[in-house]
Length: 169
Image (cartoon, rainbow, N blue to C red; front, side, top):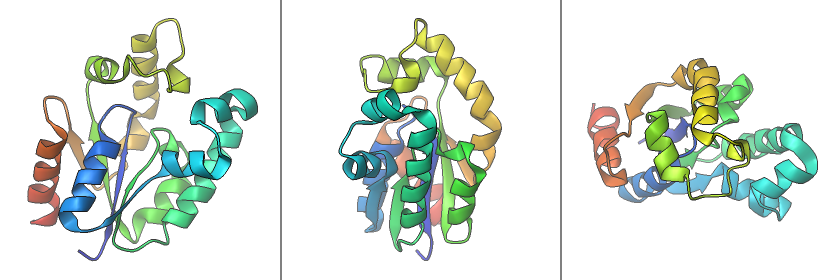
């Protein structure tokens, strides 16, 4: 495969797990932008949001993504809000297949409800917040080469579907 693979989508759609499995299957390196941000800042994303705010986080995220865009033979999982800055996607456009993973709000909620490391969901009604954020971001997420709904799929099934549809076509 000549191109990298970049996975976009809302939290809880399976980007990291699917990305790791996809990278393993295709013998690619795997990078998770959120993990790299936490390593770089030596803090959790929650702590970065709490101490320095979302705009500081987004500036660090963009810097990490610029570095990742230079990688070769890589599968990259982007944080859910990375698509909000069009430049974050544009830097991958020439070298990568951009794949958006989706799921219904209720599925996302079920997948992430026990995870307190989601700063944008530390709200009174997280399901309502998921619906609001998905609605706001839907056009950003749609800016992808391929879109796959992960509702009802295991991560391995998602990988198989991506390979069958994207790689083998």
